[in-house]
Amino acid sequence: DTGVSQDPRHKITKRGQNVTFRCDPISEHNRLYWYRQTLGQGPEFLTYFQNEAQLEKSRLLSDRFSAERPKGSFSTLEIQRTEQGDSAMYLCASSPPRSRAIYTGELFFGEGSRLTVL
Amino acid sequence: AQSVTQLGSHVSVSEGALVLLRCNYSSSVPPYLFWYVQYPNQGLQLLLKYTSAATLVKGINGFEAEFKKSETSFHLTKPSAHMSDAAEYFCAVSLNFGNEKLTFGTGTRLTIIP
Image 1 (cartoon, rainbow over the protein chains, first blue to last red):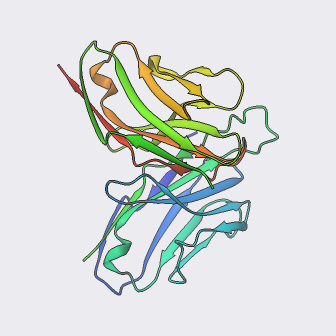
Image 2: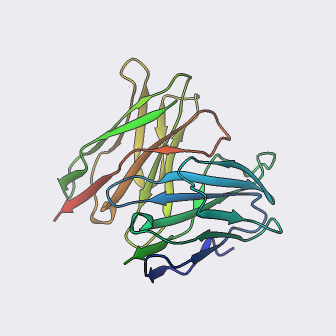
Image 3: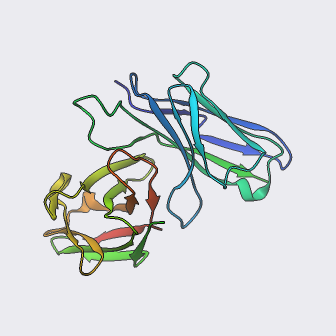
C-alpha cells in the first residue's frame, strides 16, 4: 500500500489556461475527498465521492471547477480558465468503508498538488 | 455549523519543554475533534481524535489532548518537545463520527529551539 498519490506535485500555469490534477486513493478506499489549502489557512472542503458518485460539493467549487471519479478508483479535478485566486495547494484524501473493522474515522491525505497561476 | 479557532499561528518551544497548542471549537451538536500534523513536504497525518469516549485522548508520538466541554477546548500537549516535532498542526471538527467533511483551523506552526 503506497498511500494516496497526487499528480502533478507542482503546476505553474498562466491565467486563463486549464489544469487537471489526478488523485489515486489507497486501494479499497471507497470515499475520496478534495480539499484546498491557501497560504496561512487550513484545508477547506471542496467535494467528495463515494465510489463513483459525487455526493457533495462546496460553494467554493465554482462552475469552473469539475471533479470526476469515473470508475470509483482515481479522481481528477479540473480547473478551467484559471484565475490568480485559484493558486493554492489541492489536497486529496481517502478513507475506507465505514463497515470495515479497520475504519477509524481517519482521513488519509496525499502530499498535495500545488498550483501557481501567473 | 461548526468551527475551530487555533490561538497562535506560530509557537516556539525549547527542546525538552512542554508543548501546548490551543484549539477552541464551536458546534451546535456534540463535536468530533481531530488534530492533524503536516511535516514539511508531506501530507496531513492524524495525530489523535476525540469521538465522545474518553475525554483525555492519547495519540502518536507522545501527544495527547483533553476535551473540555465547559471550556469548548481541545488543546494539544506533549510533555517534552523533540526536534522532530517541528511541523504545522491543524485542529479540525466534524459533525459526527464517520463524517470526514472536516472543518479545519488555520493551523499552528511549531518551531523547536535546540
